[in-house]
Length: 252
Image (tube, rainbow, N blue to C red; front, side, top):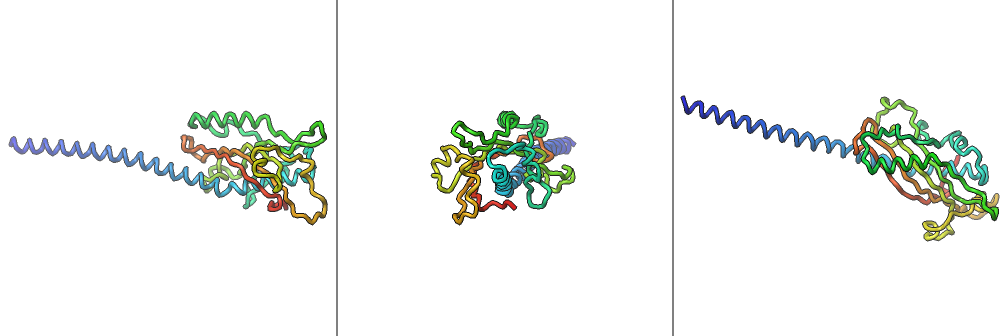
């Protein structure tokens, strides 16, 4: 009788130990599965900006080129002109517009402190823009455009099939600087020098047989967040610079 009770006691201890091990394993696997899913979503979100980044920058460059060519260097009502027939991504729904982003768009409660600081600085900076080419004392015009552009998706958020991609972000915008340049400008001057004067850049000689060597240096910082997420893994930013050839822009 004593032996049976002792055996039952060991069995109970063994069962408790096994349950404890299983509980620890479940917690470990659960946490790792959670972070695996979040990591995959984060990777998908980063891939989405790579897939759309070139189109995003080229759409903006093409719009600014059209505006500059039509209005020389003095662009009145810059934002409303940009937003009339705004740049549109393939598919015809998602547009890029000159609008001021807000902190509410991003729901800052879950964002990492470093992201919050950069985001708040960017939003405050956007409130002072656009800053357009200015006429100088020597009657030349600066060749730099500074502005902020937001991605606008008219589809109701809950109806969007992709909850991770850049174009479906509930909050996505970019700080943008465009410096007018040319293929003749050295790489050092492109990086460190001033933009070409706007009035010598726009427009080229009518009917000229020479190839169009004009370029734009587009520097930008993009902020966006993943839909339906407010953890520190759901907020993203990317900074880059591209040299865009005017001859390759689709402006029709």
